[in-house]
Length: 339
Ligand code: CP
Image (cartoon, rainbow, N blue to C red; front, side, top):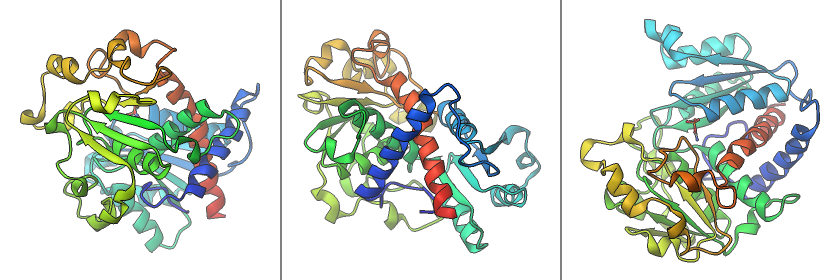
């Protein structure tokens, strides 16, 4: 596919292709030189209209490891501040010869709108969604999938390894684009996915679950888990225990205070008391349970500080490391689909 905007329509073959390609790039990254000439001469532009540490830097490093040239757009010092529109900004980078755009924006639908404009202009530019509002964060879910699957089989990670596994996603599901993308990938694998959080931070209905807030860029029907898809194993809990019981993996999510209205914001102490992941609570899970968090973390809120740093349980650093190989795979696969 030319663009990677959502995991809603990803096929098992596409997941496995990303996983296997990322294994190859992990091998490249283990070499002394760490670099291949795959995207030499191509231009990758990071268009991040919202802050980021991990995603922006790992796309930059991934592009550099593939020998592409990388442009980093900084909104605060750009001509956006003089009133230039987002589409005109994208077209400016297109005119400079950009081949792929990696886009993050606080509003859902912005990467889709830019991709649609590139298609309308009939240019072979690939657009990658690096997080749009509450909607999706596909590269994060793919690196989460890679982190879990390589733990189960480091040489041949594949979607089917997760069939029958129990995965708990805990916290601020309502505002989490990471949760939405992970739900698509993890339920596609045949895993049992259990969502748990305070009622104010959970979607009320399954059918509401992947609805995007206030985006008029495209049809919201595309963004729902259709009712016919409910044979996917997805469960919603207002308490932690049923989600954690016998879980193989626990994904904690950041409380996204910047996206909450005041009445949704629980006190941090109360949240940690009821939903914080601690060593004690992990005793409910499978003995080999592992904990993930996409970052950034509110230490001591979503997860206790000591657990976050404990390599016996925590895959958080591994997720960041995996991000480079997975993003190299995505840029490479988009590059060959454009050829
Ligand atoms: N997980 C994630 O998207 O982190 P950043 O906001 O630092 O990119």
